[in-house]
Image (spheres, one colour):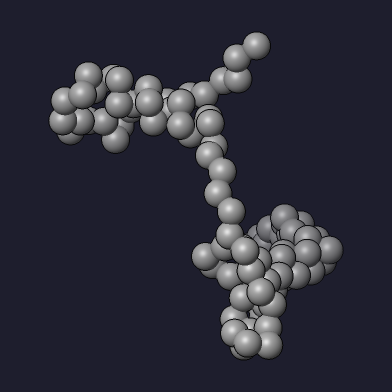
Length: 91
């Protein structure tokens, strides 16, 4: 005697439609800056124009400074990559 077990799918039709839409959306984004691929690869003279700006992530800066301080200015430990660091906002 054989028995067959059927399970309900973990994904609904709506879930599948949404994940397909997300995949399509992501495929149309530039892998370098995350904006629309159509804009950033348009013709240089007739397409969109861009201006770059820079800012600093102060959380990442604090993390880098703490990591450097942990090595006391010496060559990083071969185990440095195994360290787990956390950040928390002060105040």
